[in-house]
Image 1: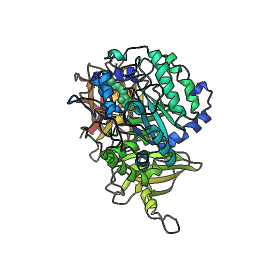
Image 2: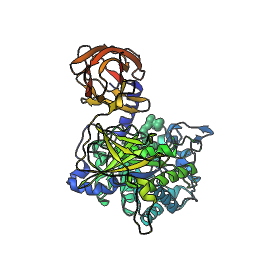
Image 3: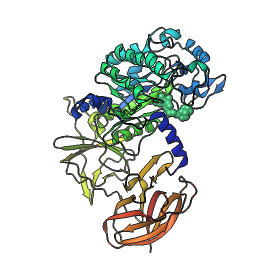
Amino acid sequence: MNPRKSTIRMTLILAACLLAPAAVPADPMAAEKETPAQRDARMKWWRDARFGMFIHWGVYSVPAGTYHGKQIGGIGEWIMNTGKIPVAEYRQFARQFNPVKFDADQWVRTAKNAGMKYIVITSKHHDGFGMFDSKATGWCITKASPFKRDPLKELAAACRREGIKLGFYYSHAQDWNHPGGAAIGGRWDKAQEGSMDEYIEKIAVPQVRELLTGYGPIAVLWWDTPMDMTRQRAEKFLPLLKLQPGIVINDRLGGGFPGDTNTPEQEIPATGYPNRDWETCMTMNDTWGYKSYDHNWKSPETLIHNLVDIASKGGNYLLNVGPTSEGLIPAASVQRLKEVGRWMHRNGEAIYGTTASPFKKLAWGRATKKLDASGATLYLHVFQWPADGRLVVPGLKNEVEAAWVWADAEEKPLPNGDRPIDMLETERSGDDLVVSVPAKAPDPFASVVVLKVKGTLKIEGVVAGQAADGSIRLPASDAICHGEQIRYESGGDRDNIGFWLDPGDWAEWQFMMKQPGVFAVTAEIAALGRGRFLVGVGDKQVAAESPVTGDYGKFTTVALGKIEIPAAGKTSLAVKAVREGWQPLNLKSITLTPVK
Ligand code: H79
């Protein structure tokens, strides 16, 4: 159904791995009759935090991506599964796991200095190894490794000292070392065989109880890969959650329980999730668990832009580090976190406690906001600083109370504590508001311009205008999609309208027409069959047919015909399917070029 085959295959694998069976019973929290106000109170710290540290640490940091001298592809913490390492052999790695350089305070300070407000650490990953002193098994750090300490105890104490929230990742379904644990791709060793129900009763439930009782307040429980998690199996964990009344759980318990948070993995969704809390978890290179030879690090700029992008869509960023078997966070990660921390130290106000951008799209960056009784504070995160000193805020109708460059206030405190700020001029330009900003970007990565406005936010959806030559390009990302399925797809090589499976669905663009006339219409389309559709403006339209490009990811530019747009002003262009013989198409853009 998805217009791109490789995408659907991945989607199915991920869905099978991550999602729950069809039946959707009540949320475990809802079962406790939690009111919306109680839920808001419970989620408040998490929503305010916006930025957390994920730590993937375990026995897999010993092989660090290499087995029998061979580099094993994929994510490092999966090495036992991907390399089909026998249980007895994998257990030998634990004997070399002696992280004597582990310093919980230093890790927590690294997170805190980066601007992170919480830490989620693997208490047990799919290899079943307990990173804590567990009474339920011998396969844990205090019993199977020479390191006799309980790193989670030390981390919990350090988090309390530093005022950082602590959460536990726990692989409750997959376990490749305890008999009966699930294994994506199938078991590969007789030692893994057994009853899953027994595994849950003897290992997973007791361990989750240990984790929720012996470590002080636990803020998050992060389930993963609910393979074979029936409702009955998932329900075994629910009573344990009462041990930590304020706990936040993610959506990966399985059994149909939605949990509190959606967890897009390694991706930032094109838009947020309306009425759902969500958190993008992401690696800094291409692995969660340490791999000695993965040097594909994201730049500090990318990390900062990701954090801002996610906050602008109302989500949290759970950014991963994979410490070594010595107990060190890789220097490349520490260095990047320092850079992010420098930015957050200056600009955190524009991230913490903010909510999603009120703008559909901003050509120069992203926005976050805080609402108050008298109006709103808009934080404009400018990635591309305007060369002409004019920052255009599209369609903003509210009266402006004040505008300033955020970093100014941070940097120029007077001895008496006052912060003199250079106020920025603002002016109206048609539908838009224009802020006059300094010539030079105050920050190399993302400069924050604050805009305090009065009243309820009023933003008109005009997103594009004509270029100097009178042409106008309408990108998929600016389209208003009408329908249940049709949607803007982004990420990877996707930047198009897709899922156009229902011919009743349609796409619309709104733009400002200044020089009306006759325009040649072209479109960038990818399709497998000839689908008929109409491009219409007012009562004028052109009938067109999609090209056959052979792949839903392969786009060609096609001329569709000419259309007259007789009037200036706000204009709406619609693309609608012709019902008879409809074939789905992916649409990347429409361009109008004036015909001389
Ligand atoms: O803990 C990290 C991953 O190990 C875990 N979730 C994050 C937070 C995770 N486990 N499974 N998945 C994510 C998705 C499953 C991916 C798979 Fe594969 C695709 C399993 C088999 C094919 C990746 C590629 C793992 C083995 C080969």
